[in-house]
Image (cartoon, rainbow, N blue to C red):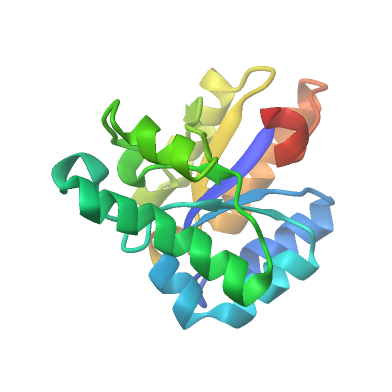
Length: 185
């Protein structure tokens, strides 16, 4: 099972998430928004120091299918460049904002050598309702699931408990957590 977090880094939630992941000894994949990376480089360093993986989640969290090709290219390339120049990290993974993309997006992914990573289990944690997260995890968790949670203010109040629900269910079913390179290659 691969645990992923979209939309960060975020000063309200990233450290809470990292603390819980450390306690549970889980490595996750963080799909980061470029403008947040620029604002909070210290959080990227912390995620990197704790040996988690990173993915590109566009620069401004724009929906790719509603913007021209030149802007699409910028949304993807600027995040890659930022990670390479500031943190010496070459990104391998990409997730489009809101999971929306066009087939033409694959042209840009090839150009930047990125692999598209969607999810198989949407927790709806951004609705800030733990019962929805619990229902989604119990009903849809399967071997090789890619789970998406959010590193944002929307999920702050339930993020620790959401991770706990996932961890408990994964362990109850005798699954295990994997790292990005192990699960996605």
